[in-house]
Length: 355
Ligand code: FAD
Image (cartoon, rainbow, N blue to C red; front, side):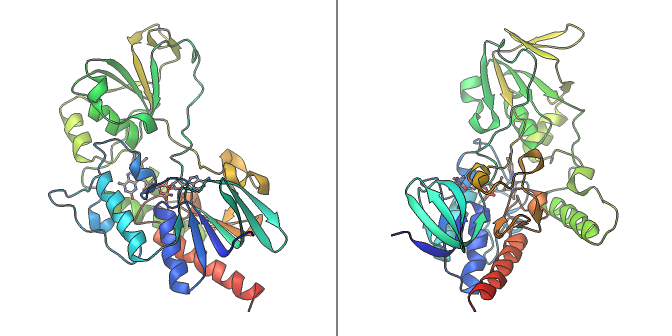
């Protein structure tokens, strides 16, 4: 028999858990399906030295503050995994693991959620699958020519097996800057960015980013001009390791090269940098392939939404993918509000279909 849950949440990372918290509060029956076998979402996969760019209290999901990590102002990823593990236990969130959703289909009054271990029927679906599972690699001339090792952010763990190597790190965002800082001491590093790196002021952390994202959304919703949001402040949060490497003069960026060659990279003027490893810190795309059967895909692999609700399917909400699904919704502190709004919207929908 096909199990039925009034709401199926796809993804048991921070966004899925925040949705679960609000569904519990409203007394709506639900299940969370998560492809990984252990709690913590993407935080289980980050590199070893990663620390949050905000203190614990400003990295909290709804209902429960993240406790401080002893000896750390900015907690590390391990601490976030412990917090999320505790969060789902504390609120007794029904997470089924490991269950990978393969496709969501329209099926009369229901949405049919097909997984690698059975099919669910739901009145509404919240998709909260994050971006970490869909690394993005730009197309660069000579891509197949390079003979060394290629990695994306998601495969980087620590400098341990890269010491002494010639490395090119590509990307001027937080991942690129943090990984470049990690490698700046023990490798022959070339850091390449599309435009000169834009460090945020040293006293700006995740709180200011959240405020900037919220102010932008409010301005746009009120028909005022775009404040620019987080992008207007800069690209790179100057977390302590980045600041230290920058202040020691170790984070000097070169412009983007024009092609790959067998032994490294080459700029348009013929200058070359040798490399045996290239690490692409070039971002992610939303992991939405499970929604393909609904045929909702719009520009840049996104789905058009009103708030978090899919414009072409009112029973579907998208949560946690970035500012386009709620201001700062891809952060711990920012996902609570869009999660609450999505669940309220679903509550109203359910009340309308079955009073
Ligand atoms: P994820 O954590 O990716 O969780 C999604 C879950 O969905 C996973 O468990 C996955 O297994 C599951 N899933 C995926 N596809 C399927 C499927 N088809 N079926 C079932 N399950 C599926 N945020 C902060 O708040 N503070 C920071 O300091 C901070 N620093 C960051 C630094 C870096 C370098 C990066 C990359 C991100 C940072 N973030 C930070 C951003 C953000 O908090 C994370 O990206 C966060 O993990 C997103 O949470 P999520 O729940 O949306 O997705």
